[in-house]
Every structure is written in structure tokens, then in C-alpha cells.
Length: 107
Length: 191
Image 1 (tube, rainbow over the protein chains, first blue to last red):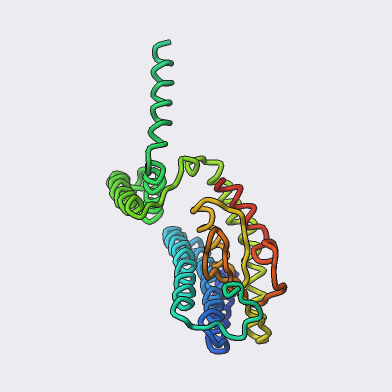
Image 2: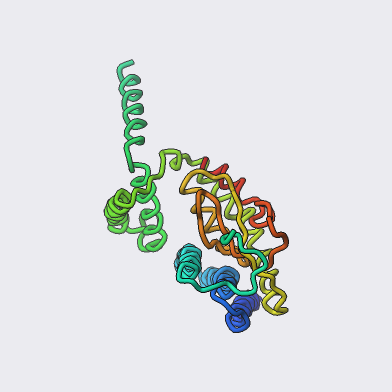
């Protein structure tokens, strides 16, 4: 029963990772592609880490789950900072965001 | 009577020391590294959960890490006031992470996943003015916005944030449209 939950969470996380990869394929400039990468890091990684935590409780080795949670926290912090750095660098380098409706930076 | 006076003077001296530049940064870096070290070595011994050596080493490592942190932040001119040591603010921060932030994260994840699959997007760069003065607050807000799928902080000028939005509902949005109630919560936490 508990393994069903673990596999369900794993499949859910992998599905979100797949959607993130699809976003990289479908979208057209760095800024829109970065939205896809946040999708991977947040829901994909949270679901996978949650499945690891449940597994570690099931085999009664909670350290594994704790380490996974620490990894998740660092993943989220670094993802936010890195996304911002990539976006800002590519704007300063002169890559124009495409298909924009509004551009407040040009105003 | 004497002892009471001594404790009072010691407390006042401690409070003055906290105002010394960078001490709050030192204390926070020390505590965070201590917690991290203890999390990574949990279950190593019989003394509560840790062995005696790990407990000693955690304090030494904490001092080293905090010293490096204070060296770098003083070079860069980053400062965190003594306000950040208030435990009430830390509880508020935890409530913010597990309350409104988690809720909007879930909502935005499903919305963006749907938009990726359907290809129905309307990207825009919009400007918001969250009226947060402190460096820490603006950094927290920018990171929260970037971590939520669908919104991405591009630039900060004069405490205004420029955000790349995957699906722009309005041309000149209010703060609530872009980042539900993040700005109010962060103002409560940092100011």
C-alpha cells in the first residue's frame, strides 16, 4: 500500500519533469524557457523528495529523508538565484524577449 | 540585589553588542550552519541523536563558517539588522513558506503545466512597486517571485521590480495580480 503511494509520487514528479522538458522544446526564448525549468525544480523535485521521505520512514532510516529535505532546500534557493542571474544576464547581453505584449523596461 | 544589577548590565551590554556591525549576521550564519550540520549528521550516536564528537565539531564548523560569512558580507557591504534575530519573525517566515507561498506554488504549477501543454501564452515584462525598503525584503520577494512558475524577476531599479510574466492578464497590474499576497507578508516579516 505504502509502495503504491511512493510510486504514485515518483510518477507525478517525473510527469512534471517531462512537462518542463516539453517547455524547453516548445518555447522560443531564454525567458519563457526558464519558466519551464522552475516547473521541474518546484513540483517535480518536491514530489520526488516526498517519495524519498516516505520510503525512508517505511524502512525506518530517517536520515536519508532528512538529507533529501536538505538537498531540496538548497535546490530551491539555488534555482531561484540562478534563474534570476540567467534572465538578467541574457537581457543585458541584448537577447530580445520575443512576442511580448508589454515591455515596461523600455518605457 | 547585586546579582540582579549584574544581570541587567550584562543584558544591556549584550543588546549594545548586537548593534555592532555584522554581529547579527554572525549569529544567524552560526545558527544556520549549526542546524545544517546537525541535520546532516543526525543518528550518529547515543547523545540524543548525535555522538559527542559531532556535537563538538558542529560548533567549531559553525564558528568557521560564520567567520567566513562575516568576512564576505563586510567586504560586499551587506548588512542584516538585529531585528532579524527576533524569533517571532522566524515563525512568521515559516508560516509564510508553508501558508500563502506553498498555496500559490501549487496553483501556479498546475496553471503553467496547462499552459505549456496547450501553448496558450502571452509573455510580458511588467513593473510592480512593492514598497519594500530593506535589501533583505526585496531579495526575499524577488526570489519568491522567481520560484513561483509563471513569473520571473528580471531587474530591480529603485526598489521597483521588473517581472517577466508568462501570461499577462493586465497591462499595468497591481501587486496582487502578480504575486498574490507575498509583498504584505514580507513587509510583515522584515520591517
